[in-house]
Length: 64
Image (cartoon, rainbow, N blue to C red; front, side, top):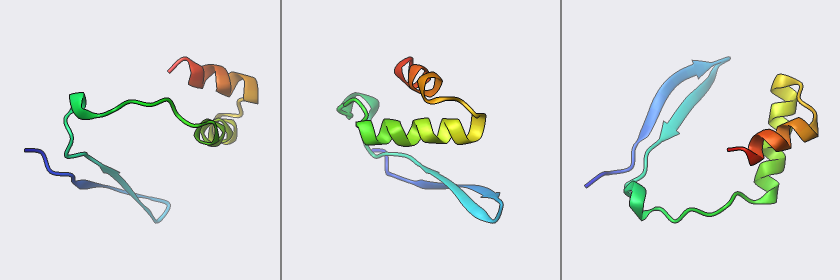
């Protein structure tokens, strides 16, 4: 059986980078669409990092 793990990826600018795994198998995960608040946060980040306007960021996120 899989166990959840936190993986240390290193640091960037003094901030630790981490990711994690789940104890659930791929087929056990119930997929739900992301919330509007999450999409807005992601769109804001895409704008800050890549200079994308809101329309471009939202189109990109819809395509995922």
